[in-house]
Image 1 (cartoon, rainbow, N blue to C red):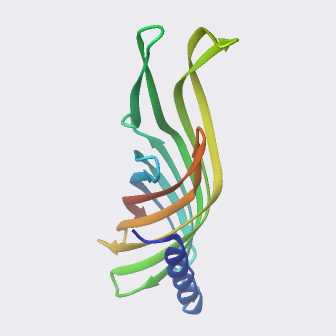
Image 2: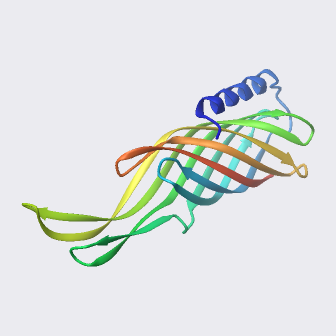
Image 3: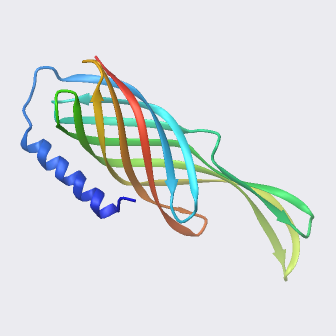
Length: 202
């Protein structure tokens, strides 16, 4: 698994190369696309899938500004909790509601069709947690209730990727991205994603 420090170093190196080779071109363009991500929450054994859209503006062959908006799919993490006192089983579930990222994209062409790039920016992710809360008084059990809780995580995100120009308008890409440490319930966990997608320039 690529460490955070190594990934950050590679991203900075990509930024340095792209900045050094920057030249303003006449074919600046907007682009739109779709993205699918598999997200891994370390230390908790959680995996989440999300699907979304992206849009951006390419200032040159080296620098772009990109926004990504994703929505969690229904196959988030889920389990069951058996409560001995009531002899009932209660569901527990974690899922991504929405995820919004604003990213600088810094590219370095390897050939006419193949490009590597670094990503750096900010993300805002909202999780939905379905859980139970027990109520006691003087060590005596009173009740158990099901709750819905929202957790919002905002912070710096960065990554690295590669893209292939299928046609002058259509590009396929894959990238690896690190998100801010996520705290669910009581402990923080490392969090990253592997994404694939396609974009269309116009």
